Amino acid sequence: DADVTQTPRNRITKTGKRIMLECSQTKGHDRMYWYRQDPGLGLRLIYYSFDVKDINKGEISDGYSVSRQAQAKFSLSLESAIPNQTALYFCATSDLRGTDTQYFGPGTRLTVL
Amino acid sequence: AQTVTQSQPEMSVQEAETVTLSCTYDTSESDYYLFWYKQPPSRQMILVIRQEAYKQQNATENRFSVNFQKAAKSFSLKISDSQLGDAAMYFCAYRRGNFGNEKLTFGTGTRLTIIP
Image (cartoon, rainbow over all chains, first blue to last red):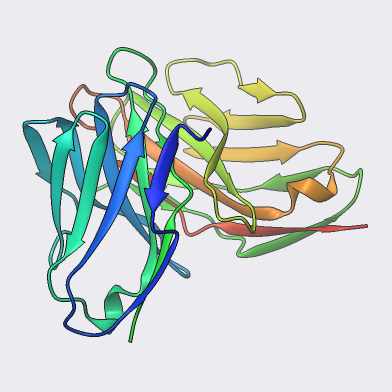
């Protein structure tokens, strides 16, 4: 079984709709991240969380919100989706007690029409 | 702000040959980490190799090795004996080493094609 899972894997939605992307991990890591990937731009950090009570904005947080429901779960919400939020979204985890390496989920491809 | 530059949008190599992907970065920090991630068509981001800036020895992982030139701020990836399964996008990434700063800064990627 995958250590970092994301649901859904693909989603098509309409402008103005609220949508939630979910991430779960079984690695026991305390740190979790949401990234966005656009063609030609690499990955950019949206939000990150060092533990359940710690949420931090990344470089492109506008239009997004997150919720850390438990150590193993970190959700990303688009309150009112817009077409330029069409992208590939990745969740990642890392372990404060281990190495600094971030491990990524399989990604969610989101299309906003 | 840290930046990571991959100047080769696309590369190709004959199967079994060696290829080198380039990466340069800009930072004023002395403590940091560098990574290469692979993204195959499945779109999963897979860690290939990791380098600590304080280590002079270049990291290696089987057929993958890096040439880390700290003074030049260069971090290239060499793939030896290229295989069809190596075909993917490759991303170089930087992370500052101080506690509490876990942000990865990515380059824009290099698409590697393996020619049978």
